[in-house]
Structures are given as structure tokens and as C-alpha cells.
Length: 255
Image (cartoon, rainbow, N blue to C red; front, top):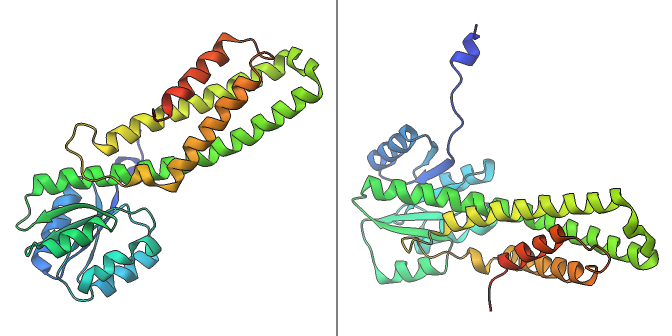
């Protein structure tokens, strides 16, 4: 028999969104529509109110009007990298202009939408923006894990060079293979998420993530890991490790 708490449990929100707009009717209706789609929404009617919320909470996405108090020259958007690093922004405006569009290109703007907003278009961009945010978080996590793995592999290499007999230890080889397998699996999952968020079906917006320093760190760690596998291939004569090396190489961008 289910308890009352279990029967009333609500699913976790698909993402937490901050909506900033000085038009209360637009603000409330947009928030309500997105809540019905499963997102948690907070509302702000000025840049100052939005900043206060950004300082207090972590959001997956900001949906912001351009013309509102405190957002002259897109001041609110310019503060996003410091307030919430990596958070994408969807801009809405009833007064599109070339200057604001050009400014948006230099800022963490994921989409630039013209009012009146088509909700289906907004919803699609919101879903993609939240996915983009989560891929960025996954990228940071996997980069840290892979960097640690490379350090461990360097220790393995040093140990082998000091004592070649270590390669004869079955448990040692098994632990190494398991570590490589787990890392390769995590990277393949990340690649799938990355492709989803980037919108490789040619419908996606401008995506700054490939220039992210974390991506460069990930690629460097992969390249170093491949070099270590190459240097130790005579010690670990394993088809499985050779296949893992090929999977790592496939993840690196082609020249």
C-alpha cells in the first residue's frame, strides 16, 4: 500500500528557468506555460530583481526581455558569466535591431526571439538551452575525471618502467582495463549528449561550447591518454585495450 507522500510525489522539474520581463502579463503567462511543460520557473520584472535571484539560486536558463529596467546595453546579460557561469540566455524583444543582435553574438545568448513569441518555438529553444546547460556540466565532470585518469595512467607507466614484471599481475591488468572501459563509456555518453545539445540537424543556434576551455582540456587529456596507451602497448598485449584506444581516437576532432 502506498503512503500518502508517495502518491502525491511530483516528478522532478525538467530544469529551473529564470524569466525576466517588465510586462507582467507576458511574464506570468510565459512562466505558466513553461510550468505546464514540466519546468520550474522564477520571475523577475527588472534586471535588479533578476540579479538578486541569480545570486541566490542556480538556474539552467535565463529567458529575458531586452527592454526592461536595468538592462540598458544588455547590462544584465553581460553580468551572466560572473553570476552564473555557463548558463545560456534566450533573448526576447518586440523591438529587434541590428545593434542588439550584434551584441548578442558576443554574449552567452542561445537564441534571439521576436515578440509576439510563438510558444512552440520558445519551448523548443528552452528545451535545447537546458540540454546545452546540462551537457556543459557533464563536460566539466568528465574532463575532471579524465584528467585524474591520465594522472593515474602516468603512475602506471612509471611503475611499469620501474618494474616490468608488474604487467604479469592479472589483477593489475584487470583493474587497468576496467578503468579504461568506464572512461570510454562515459565519453561515449558525453558525445551523444553533446550532439543532441548542439543540434547537428542544422536547426541549432550558434553554439559557443566547442571553444570552451574545458573542451580543449578534454581533448588534451584524451590525446595524452592515447599516447600513454601507445607507449605501454607492448606491456599490455590486449585486444580490448587496443579497441579502447581506437574509441578514444574516434572522439578527438579530425584535423
